[in-house]
Image 1 (tube, rainbow, N blue to C red):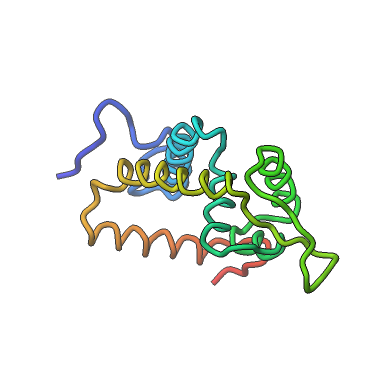
Image 2 (image 1 turned 45 degrees about the vertical axis):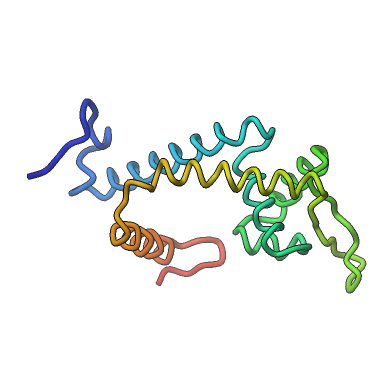
Length: 162
């Protein structure tokens, strides 16, 4: 027996179980809902999801070049520059000239940035528990497999369809 969500159709385009466009819209809606939930949780820290990604990456990897940071987060150069401008303004990260290449910058967290990185990890964990905690372990594994497959089949700037 199919169970519909109470009070609302799965997609304004149609049934995502049978319509690819409706499924795509449902996936986009889920992404927007997750991003909004994380942004609300991060708001008391004065940061947003885009900042969280950079803070978490720097906390995990240590000082990193802008180019590598963009590659790790799948961000273009202008997006990294914009986010770094904001993080520097907030006093959470700094750009220093890289010792091995004076044309490049090594980005690193400030002490306050490390505190924000830890606090934002806790906030993201709370959101993740709320959004995904209801999944059984095998459902979570299946979701990861399905989402990875979608990413693998989606063409991107530097990614050919597989």
